[in-house]
Image (cartoon, rainbow, N blue to C red; front, side, top):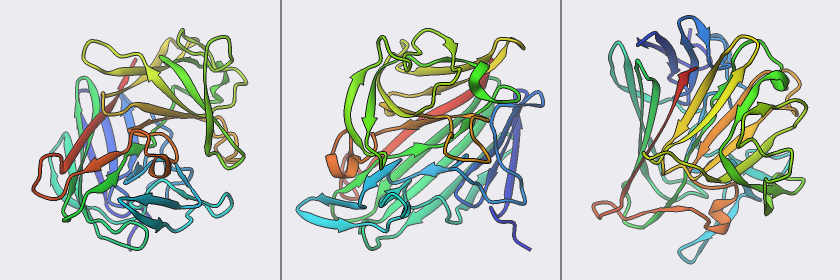
Length: 306
């Protein structure tokens, strides 16, 4: 019998334990010294709400699933039919092939074949690696075709630091700009977070704030990394997520529209581009034709305990 998310790959290292699945190369579980850092999903269940999934070759939504590229119009399947959008890419539910597994790491590959709406072929590779610093996830895409290919990526880890709801947890999010959206969750503007309830540049409790918001203009450290932290002040412990300089956006989501999961965790989603990037072109990566400079893109993010 095959589990809904396929084979399960458990790795350990530096006090951490993670489980990655064959289905979608999803991060099903992450713990530090037995303390969960993610709201994952059961081994006998399929993920819901995007938990732990990779969002490739685009994160978030494309309005009407339509976009133009290199002089051609394309129509993607509407994977979010209620809102009429193409959502979260094409690899969330596919079976990834195990490339290599060690005690502390697992690498998987998938060849995304050309198809209706996305007529480009990419080789995809994801590495989950544990160390004393925590989990590092590196996603690499290589264009195998003769034409340039549009590309963006994201991931959907749902952070936790104890039993929810998220209201009493303190969030630190060093972002100064957020996108506004319409009723289909498609961007229609942007605003400075200053003097709003979405300003978490200084740590403060989430309280009743509802978040399903893309943030940018991110403050980075000397290594180009952004650090987003979630802390339970009562227990004086937490979790932090970092993203490298190829991730220019982060989506933060309290899950208020998911009855079974609402406010139980905080999704902190590293993204290389904003929602609807295939249509707008904003921060869209264009992979060069195979064999040319720029035919590959690699980006990393990670999670550690506080």
